Image 1: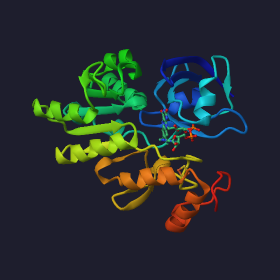
Image 2: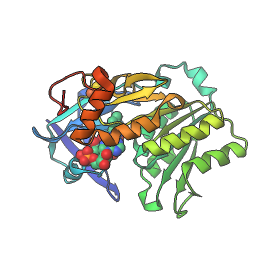
Image 3: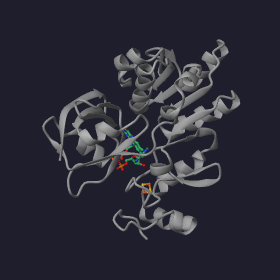
Image 4: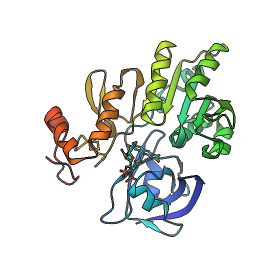
Length: 295
Ligand SMILES: Cc1cc2nc3c(=O)[nH]c(=O)nc-3n(C[C@H](O)[C@H](O)[C@H](O)COP(=O)(O)OP(=O)(O)OC[C@H]3O[C@@H](n4cnc5c(N)ncnc54)[C@H](O)[C@@H]3O)c2cc1C
Ligand code: FES
């Protein structure tokens, strides 16, 4: 059992929790995620590790209430327990392995959309702790929906908030801010974009034109999160990859976003899963037998 030490509402439908999970806190790196389960019958919910404190043995998660499970989770309070808190899962961000001197010479741009600020934060924090300052664009619909602003400001070199309705920071989407920064003479060696798939798709279309290599963190439907079922299948460079073990980070210019978005919708229904099974064969469902798939 994993105790919730803090539960806080950050914005409308967005919540933060600190959870006691010493083993995950000891081993996790930026870019990785956990799968949580509230009780024995609960759904498995993948969530990116937003922050970690190795000494205190805690993990911070930030989640958006979008469906039944996240709605139920938003009602949990400090002192409640998660039945399961599995992780760290997925591969850490590539830069964790990179030579620090090479990294310091790179100009990096992070782009976060909505609750995507949560997974971007540990990466920017890790880089700051290792002496690398990066530019960060965070987009949200309105000022009230911007999250983790203070924390992000503390670790970012330059921090650029954007709001769709123009109530704060740059008025417009993250893509128009990227264009503006490049027009102003900024040259980026790499862009890391995390947020809704549609935002990552349009960011990639732009950065391809601007010739900025781009990494995205894919968030397909997941079930086991350990490579056994193929629910999280994405096409990258024409090849089938499982986001939970091969990712979740991939070269954004090689990701087939249209397929990923269509798949995410189809996986919701039994009929959709049946069609996917025919279309995708073995790579649709390896057969873990426990995940509610229809093999
Ligand atoms: C690796 C990974 C990391 C993630 N990190 C975070 C995070 O840090 N914070 C966070 O808020 N969410 C994150 N997500 C998404 C999160 O897991 C889903 O929002 C959650 O499982 C939805 O559960 P639900 O039962 O509340 O909604 P459901 O009832 O399952 O779905 C409600 C609606 O949301 C859509 N939906 C479901 N899952 C996703 C998804 N993965 N992405 C986009 N739309 C979806 C469905 O199509 C449906 O329309 C992550 C997903 C993955 C795979
Ligand atoms: S969730 Fe990735 S293989 Fe099952």
